[in-house]
Image (cartoon, rainbow, N blue to C red; front, side):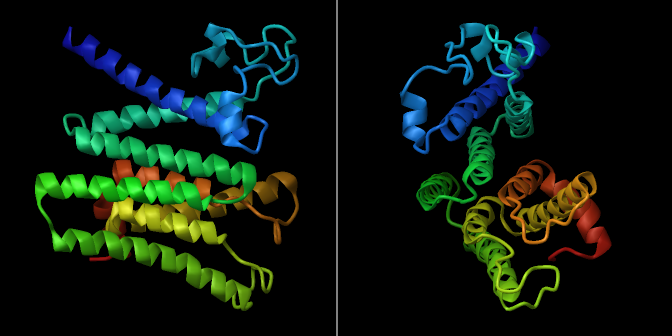
Length: 280
């Protein structure tokens, strides 16, 4: 009975994550530049035939599977990205629950990190920017969670320095790379063109404040390698150079952050320090 209860709990937690992904997909990709209009103007519908989606189709993850990835009426194909994004949030929310089980403070904070990583990723993909107003909201929530932590655990100056150093250091990396690229110091990047958006540097502050030094360090390396790998694969598939083209980097920052949040300590102490690349 205990195993059944645990399994059902993990499933429900995963569905919460998938539901959040579904909601954010509608808010960002809903067809209007205003997120508020996208979530309030009318019920979810097929973009082709305008038919309102029924209850089964609205079920996160399973709705896409049960409909065969097509509209029930006009049979137009529904992008698989909806299924993939909801499935990923299902998995990440479940993993956060399993990792921090019993520590509700860390569990909710982990869900918050995963959620803002997902939101800023799809926003960057859609609009190519990281909006300041939502970064401010994320920063305020992190500050609030810090106050709650201090109330229950006491003030630790070393911990504060750790997270501030992570935030400022990670952001400074983006600033330095941007300045160097605009000066033409990096040969692989067009002269006077930013290597990254300044929104990436601002998001780096939020990530650093969320993860601390070691995990932020892991997050950065994962972001760099996954972004570089994506660029190489893109060049091989399309058989053309991507120099001068813009590739959203926030999704790779988000991927690194979530992986680091879940397995950062393991990676840091078993791989990074072994290779002598870590910050002792």
